Image 1 (tube, helix red, strand yellow):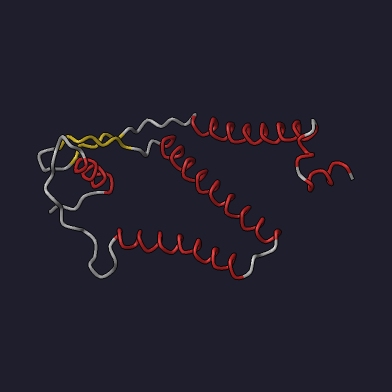
Image 2 (image 1 turned 120 degrees about the vertical axis):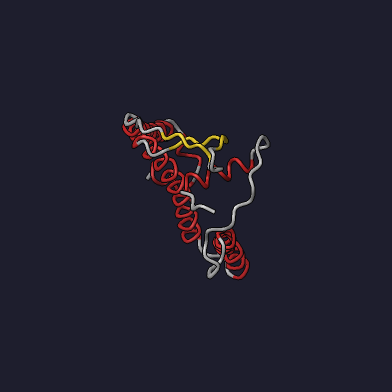
Length: 165
């Protein structure tokens, strides 16, 4: 079978999942020397999920101090927010540069999905995304300060010590 680009293969997979059209199965273009992509995905997923088991074991055997636990939680929360931010901003950059393509389930004469490339970039998305990120951070910091100055700081012992003494 002819070799397909990444966008064409994504379009083919989209069409395979569509109830309207059925395509003949395509032979794998990957090498049989290494694990398949699904095997790699399973391996990475298992490795990342195994940290939960390790953390539970450490928590049962010897509970770390509050500082260590807070550090792990802060790191984990920051890593999740960073992953989300990178994923969203990468999509915005691809859209702004015009690198995205629309794939439909219509096929040409050779059986390849028809791909519509939208070369017009939406460059205004980048300053809007950066402005929203900065505005959201400033709004959060401002509201946090406002609430703390109006009594919200006395909810926890650590914040009471910072504001009283």
